[in-house]
Length: 440
Image 1 (cartoon, rainbow, N blue to C red):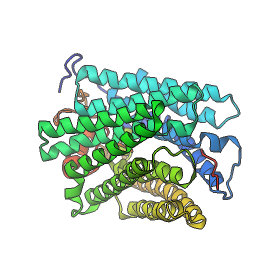
Image 2 (image 1 turned 60 degrees about the vertical axis):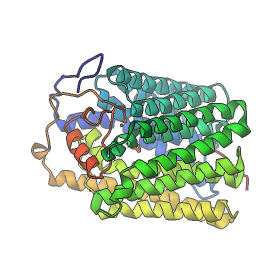
Image 3 (image 1 turned 180 degrees about the vertical axis):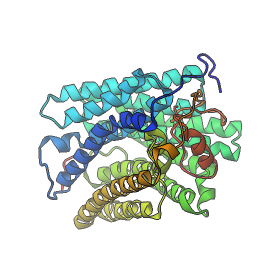
Image 4 (image 1 turned 30 degrees about the vertical axis):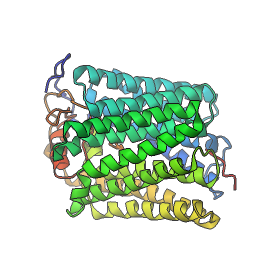
């Protein structure tokens, strides 16, 4: 489908799939380092033995994982969808900024690169908007604005707890925008889309208000997150696919579990007001970024990663093991350790959270390698000869994984298969638009 201003990108990708996938994997290297460094910092914050005990890691723990890791994944997916070279500035700067945060270099250098990467990500969304405006794209662009706001405020010296609403809004709005297209499978009414945009606007307003009037702003943010979760639960196809089998059921279960954790975070903000330390802060942070965001990444990985990297990642039941370990251990950490103030449960749950993340990475990598060996390069689907202009942008979690229902770019030939999986309840394909120190 042709965008309103620019028309479709009809360049043909003549590179071998393996070479293109390898080049796209380059920005994933700093994202992987950021993930490992963030998990190491988590061990330090939990008071557990850690491979690296640098004092700096706990200070950058939150921003490193949100912008250095998840931000790089989101930006890479958008860059692949848009095509060309300049969009890769976004994942490149975000990844490099994350790496600088864990080196002895001045923190301002890393903060500056994260700011530049967030600005480049917003520019990517603006390019998509010129081609085809849509409500889904607007939501994800609002998420990019939140990322840029967080990076600028951190560059200006604001502490991480004050940035928490901005960091949360970045990934929450990105995922919400991605889930709008699957919701259209159920034939959304114009009123439902207007309600969705109202929820997005309320979240953005709450985020800005937390800086000026923390107490009322936090209440507004909590209420708007609950409203957004309610919209997603009602309209997302995940609820109807929970009785299916295989990948659709796995994806639906991860999505619904993620929505439950986001609802808990919204309720804690609504009932407790601003939190900057202690068990409630830990509960909110990890309900959003582990319970919601990481669950979205797990849900979409079997579709998003093959589309971006041109490497197969077939669904296998073993992928469910780290997912349920994540949610079970998060329940121990948050519901018992944080909300009941039981230190041993908090520490045990945190350690198992880290184990779940590492287990998922290893399981996915092993599954991809095994599938690649079974599928020779000649048998892999060739990339599309043309790139369509998106109607909306999209993660992954996330992945999402970045909109008319008929219009979305198909980076490399995996997009068509992804859309059919989406209609059948699988994880959405990549869309173009689609530290605290523990006081205990």
